[in-house]
Length: 290
Length: 264
Image (cartoon, rainbow over all chains, first blue to last red; front, side, top):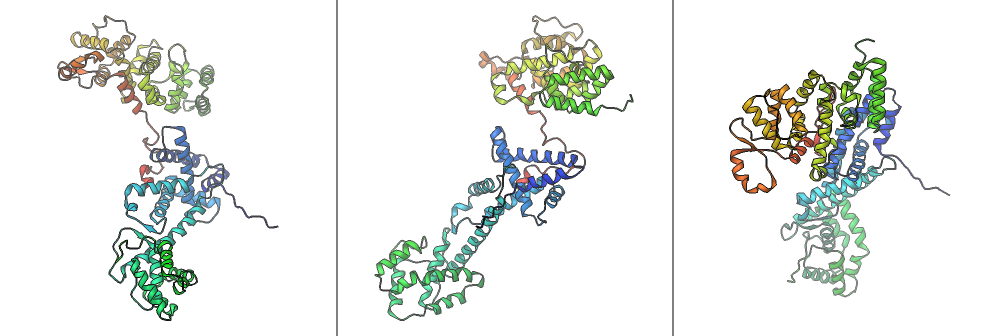
């Protein structure tokens, strides 16, 4: 029987401090760190938790431990306690905290979902997002395990991917056959779905936003004549910059045997349209029928 | 014993005892030190304590309880430690029980200054304490508990000079202390008065105590009189002057603190 592989580690800051305890002459460095760490804790409490209650200060203490640990974990240094300690002592706890906090801010600037709305430009909302991420990733109890660095890596990759999808959707919108779509809200998944579905009709201008009538025309049109779907898709791919190809390929593979099959089958047009409207075109549809 | 010893072991022991809340044991350590090395050794140890630790220790021995520390602490060290006296006051307590805080502060200051009979020591204690902002505020707190009497005394001193004044109509506890200040250090006396009556100009505005049932007078009073700060206001001022770690100047060889910039 294979046992599950579990890695358990204390927060990086704690590991660095354990390395400090091993050093022979650590009195002064320890005192310095103590002062810096308590100073940071007070600042964190003042800004995020509450510096007037014991609970607020304890929470700020956990956040401080985590944020410094994140700063250490993202640094380009050997994965050894001694290296972490040298890094911490060299830069000072405040700077390492700052690094950690900047990582959080960078992460928070990336899209959490593939849906863009005006709401996100609000400074209050941005502040709230930073705070939410900060307390989600940087909360580290020194006496137990911390996986914030893993969470950070995962979130980072996921959000990078979202960023790409949004980039792709924005590009498609720019090339919309009826002129660029100008709408502050963007449902990136839907934009890509529409473009991919409409591309089956052959080498035609890119479609990024639709009304119900467009769908009717498309389905009626593609059912009349025999169709080379792949040729249409290749035509789309030729127009789109290469960095977005992976996203489109993924989508094409997903649709080839699902919705595209349905479009070409004998299912009633009404059923197919409802399915596309519900599951694919999302928020990128005109409400008016004309 | 050479002059250069400064008893680091005893200082550390006392600091640990005080921080652990065991001021009685710390006091025992002082007596032992005095027996073994003499009173000067105790002074040295007290000087080498961090001011917040000294303050913690002294505040445990106000009023009735006698302590070697209150007797022997150097005026400079005492002035420093005064800054931390208000560290444990919460804003709620200041709001709810200003009298209690005022009394404990009075007991402490009175205890230290009148612990010894030497006039030079008293003068030095007053001088050093009142050359700091927090010390001035602390004394103003005491005076604010007897504003009317202080006004009477101040007017008396202003018209007749310090040496011939002193008999007031009241026997409030603060008066002897106020007289002591006025007699030993007239600059310090002015500073405390100014802290208590921020609008005070000698000879031009009359000092005035604000009482609660005189709301209508306020307008007139504002122009013609210097209004006294209340005990509560002064306690808050004192509390705000407690130094915190973040504002203290960084020690030599350390990097300067980033402060709020750590979030940038």
